[in-house]
Image (cartoon, rainbow, N blue to C red):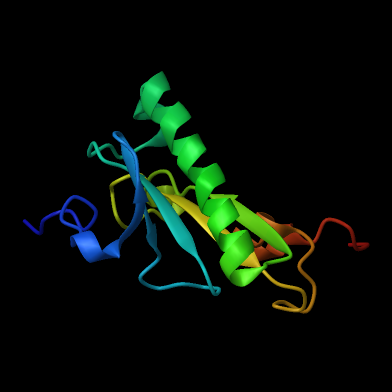
Length: 127
């Protein structure tokens, strides 16, 4: 069985950490600065976190956002979790995506994360 990619991260990939979590840049970024916030404990779902882990991951999310603001100056963010294979989770170790967004990186960004199901994303046009 293949070892968990997030449990065996090389130290040079880690850009921030706390006792319960760590921050890395996504290995397959969809935008400049795409970042992941990951619990140190191997846990698959956001709903399996204990309150202290959840709080610490959200604090790391805030810190990562400040770094991206300074380094990349994005105009917006998408924050997402693929929780379970049906939701598209491919690494079964929880990770929070902090995706920096830029003006004109998509012709029409309305709908944001709703585009995971394209035929339901556009709710503002007449159908």
